[in-house]
Length: 179
Image (cartoon, rainbow, N blue to C red):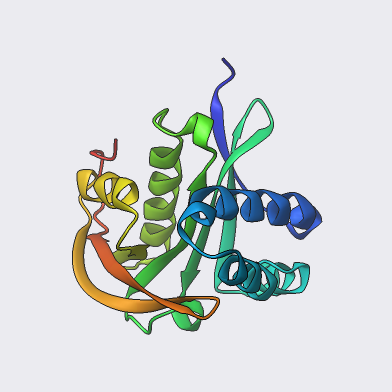
């Protein structure tokens, strides 16, 4: 199998990012939400205009996880005023998704390490994210890798207000225990 690699996403890759992001979101959440709420959320948050706006935002970065040049995962990092919550000295993982057939194969760990490295380069103290209370698989992954719940917030999917656990990990200079 070819090695995994992580690379920054550029504006020229907008269509690939948009399609992959939409597919992952639908694959992950469609079975647990109404078609109406999924459609509304996709229209609002995964439009070409919205993703282009994020790609042009100076406090947002996207990264692809690739396997032999094929997209198998992606990461969106926000910091400063681009975060969904105003947290000082923090970097937010706004989105981190791995294609289902590559879950459990260290792809998520590579993306997580990329986020930690980026946070370290920015001089941030914390890396945080929001995870839906019903996404126990993701919560288990984050807890296994040292994240702890520190708060909660509402995530609006269409017209449905859902509870997200806010989880964080301290960014340290020598963090090797991500698995």
